[in-house]
Length: 481
Image 1 (cartoon, one colour):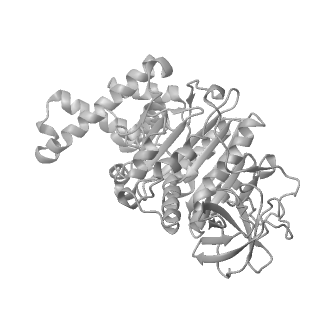
Image 2 (cartoon, rainbow, N blue to C red):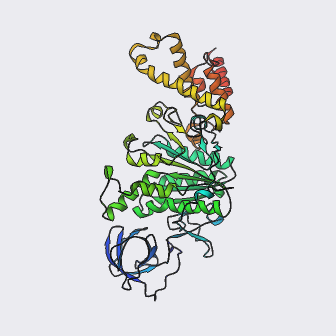
Image 3 (cartoon, rainbow, N blue to C red):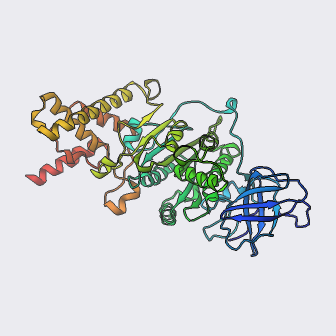
């Protein structure tokens, strides 16, 4: 791995220190001059090889000793190794040179396409969020082309959205689809932060973007699952810094995607434990709320340029009362909840229409028709859920005529809100579709009015618009007769 390009250390400088203790990814270093580097400053440690190890200061133990967390593997590091301050936080490359590239937490390329030019501009990963007076608070809908999201949990342009779900319900696929559909639709920049990602997932994402036309407008930042907790803890900050440059200097709209925020919290808990802090609720770090706020509050928009963040959040054991999940919820404009029951039924995307919410679902923002249809869709599906226990015990025949009609329409709505994705074409054989919001609203309104009551439920499954369902139903009738 090439040496991280920070401020070059002056080996003869009196501020250099020595390593006094190593415990996994935590390193103690002593500085005889008593001029200690600041908290969050980056240090370079002589690891005995061609490259120097990057660490970040976390504590001042006394007037001469600091405790730091390593951003890379500490294997082979020894006591007595020299330590050089860089004079500031970790600095990473920013600007157009990072587009189409894959970098790690310290800004080094990991895509085998060569090092960055030494003259490339670099920014520190620790930065303040824009002041409230500079932020743009205008509410505007960010259309994704995904029916159930646009209808029931519309995303805010320049806002923060979270996709919550347990293991295997489709969070990463949804994120990949959003990259494909939204970056092609909006002529902006996309920054992807892979926090604790598997190498396989990173390879699949890179291959998927390479096949499409969006890689040239996308920067990828990865802190892989096999890397030290410090790397996974700070990789979100690196991605944010890249996004902030495009927003503040180039005045471009940025789509920031994180997969996933829970790994960031998990890495912070590991770092907290290694630093010797007493755990808090459910074993999480005592600084949980602060760490999430430091990350989330930097995601903001200014006049003329926005950062729209879409974050996948793993829900451990499907427990939405988990402290990490609850703290993340506090910062979001839209919450898209993925349901294991819907995934088991094959209803993809497995987004819970009742659990997903958005502050933008307001008639003053989305319009009266959209709001009314969305509320009626929710009411119909909620009534169906209430009746499910009666249906399982007594059968649908025991329901009143009105309830039977509600159940039939709710089941058609659930299937109509499924959608074939661009990124799953090779697996399903069904061409992916991006659906206009107007088509989604009019299609749901038609189902609620009973226009599709005589059609088979399968006619609505994995189609785009209502007209696609009509065509599918006509074709099915011709085959039957």
